[in-house]
Length: 182
Ligand SMILES: Nc1ncnc2c1ncn2[C@@H]1O[C@H](COP(=O)(O)OP(=O)(O)O)[C@@H](O)[C@H]1O
Ligand SMILES: [Mg+2]
Image (cartoon, rainbow, N blue to C red; front, side, top):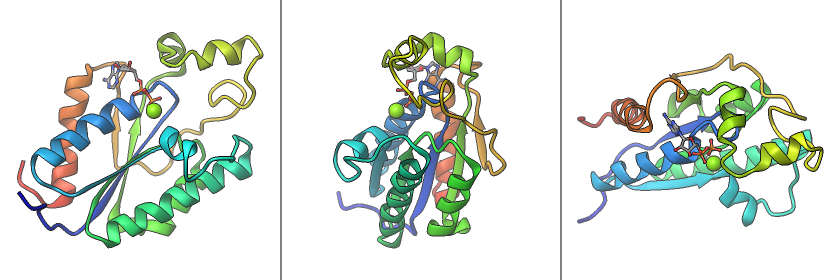
C-alpha cells in the first residue's frame, strides 16, 4: 500500500537517559507505519553512530549534534514525513534552537519525564553506574545538567504509568497533531 500523504510534523521526544524515549519512539513509529504514514526515525544513539560520529558530550558538541538532527528533521518534514526524533536535548537553548530550525507550528516537544532516581535505578545501558564510579564524564543527570523544560507540548510521566499507557497517550497526541483520525 502506498504511503498516505500528510503534511509533515516532528514529534521530538526528550528526557533523561533511561526515561523511555527510544521505547516510546519505537512504539509510535510502528503504529504510524501500520496506518501507512511515511515516517522518518531519528534516534540520538543511531545518529551518533553515523552522521554525528566524532561528536562528544561537551556543550558545543551536544549543540552541534542536535543542530544536525534538527536540520535532518526539517528536511523530513519538508518532504511530508512524520519525523519521530528521540534525543536527550538537555538544555532549554537546545529546545529553542530546534524550534527555530524546524518551525514552531511543525514541531511538538514531548517531555518523557522520569525522575533521575528512577532513571538511575533503570540504568538501561549501565552508563549511570559508570558515571557514578567516575568512569564516564559528562553523563546527563550526573556530570552534565538536564534543565527543567520551559517549552513542552506534552509530558509523559513514565515513572508513574506503564509503557503501554504512555505509548497510547503519545499515539493519540501524535495523530491529532498530524490531523489524522485516531
Ligand atoms: N511508561 C514507560 N514508558 C517508556 N519506558 C518505560 C516506561 N516504564 C518503564 N519503562 C522502561 O524504561 C526503559 C527506558 O529505556 P529507553 O527507552 O532506552 O530510554 P531512553 O531512550 O530515554 O534512554 C525501558 O527499559 C522501558 O521498558
Ligand atoms: Mg534512547
